[in-house]
Image (cartoon, rainbow, N blue to C red; front, side):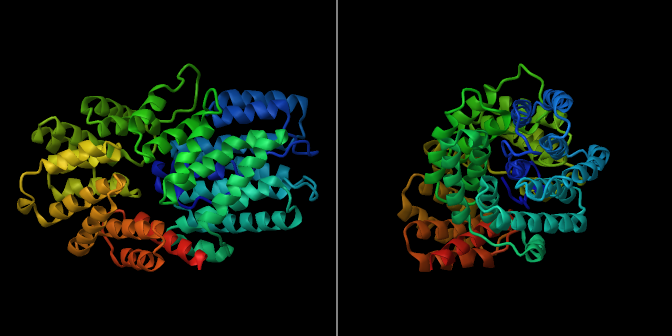
Length: 509
């Protein structure tokens, strides 16, 4: 299990990245100093379900039985990492960080002939590197990342048949294209390379290998999480994403991290009602580490159904319970939207004013919320309804909302471009591609000099359409066009997807 999720520092939107890191050191079974005993296996499953106290208790019992099992400090590091990463609590980070060095010291005493030694050392360094990136310690994180990759590369060279190595490489290949431009120097430092398709195919094969071999079956959940992340974030075609759904059905009860993954996958596929059922049906009967972001996702699902009062309840719960810094501005903006959709511009104005200048502006949604707060423009209700309904997969209802706009010629330039863009997205999902392409082209032509993201994403979608049709020339043209458009909104994420598209095209040549 392995990967270096360089985008996770941007907030809970990228929580899906953390599992790529969290499971980095997939346990090896039956190796002298890294024994995945029944007690460790139980603790491992509890960690995946965010039952950290219960997992710690299980590990303490295991220490009494087998003090030298190096799986114990490795799983303990997973707990510390996830606590800090989920909570975004800097004081907790400072209190837990000293555990890093003591664990590295213990694991370094393992035999060099053990295929888990280098992998385990790399896991711990990478986990703390990702936390350091979250708290702005880029230089220290970069050196940890470099050391980690050297260990992983050496382990692959020494133990090429060790299955966790293949998981490591699969995830690494897949996420390299998602590293933001301001962290490209880390790639150069670590000499990383790979492709999304190559990584995905490797992980699919590993998943099948885990299914066939009893000793590796505990790793299936991790591989499934990786595949879910890749399909949601790095591959435009949703066909493969749909094929993952049956794999979740093999679990009687989903651990919380897979529950999160499945809900995200359903939202990605436009199956909003199914996602809401997953989130509302989650088990609350046992004590788990607080995961406030699930409240945010629940609110998102309700808002996409235009059930604004229920959405507001969950957004406010998220704001109360979150100990982090990301998505606070966006949640407050969505509360303002809820009031606007209920017919009160005054309430909208009041709620949007509660977004503060010092709210985090690292994730795109928060940046957009801050812009809306200070630009002072009240959203058009029909366009807003269409946007939300589209995000929920209610395409016919979204189209109806747009067609209810009385006269598009009365719209401002930016809202007219938004109208074309949103109708293009609807037609795209409805597979009316000729109309979608025409509308995307109009969006690019009329919106490329506007600060909004519509033109850049329209060019990206044209690239994806032509790629799916096998027209590589036009696909490359529109991916390149996308990179020439620099909107104030979502620029980094859109450009990353365009670069990933160009990388896929080049890998086929």
